[in-house]
Length: 254
Image (cartoon, rainbow, N blue to C red; front, side, top):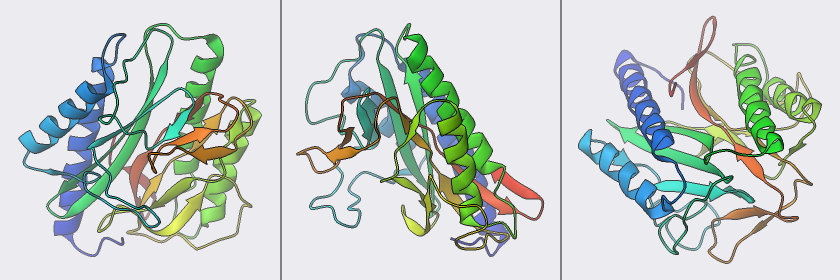
């Protein structure tokens, strides 16, 4: 969406703060022995206690055959994105990495963010994957200035991931957000600088670099939502909702 008035902007800012706080609470809850359903229950409770609504629960994205059945997407190790936390028993164990992707609707405005979290002590390569993917998000956000292009974001994200020795998951990417969970423009995590739609003040975008240790081909699980790396390699995912202002990007979901 494009922010057009102060009321929308205030709702975006407040919703982003709330989502950021909830994700940090979920981060601290991640430990060996915790189930994905417990994390999902916590996410829904925290959102509703604030008077807001879970944006993903009951949402049917384009191409899906049923509504998403949970509040939180929980993706473990080779699960890339959109892991369903509450349809089968999944318990976190030492050494896992787990992606937490959450959407919140505050006064009609949707914000979307994700983090990937180590479960206890993880391998050096897993920790490097998390660090590089999170840095790719920061580098993509740095390109979000009026007059730049979507391709500038895409190029910056891909360069950081590839320079770090990892692979870009090209089948998935970021998007506009605000009035709907997914809006235009699509923001690939790879591309040429200076190409694609022009960025302008007031745009609300969700940037989400996704990287893998091995080849980045993905397959869709039988549940219709969970993407998994085809070779079983680990994947990481970080996301912020940002607002493009005159002097650059303002992170809403910090």
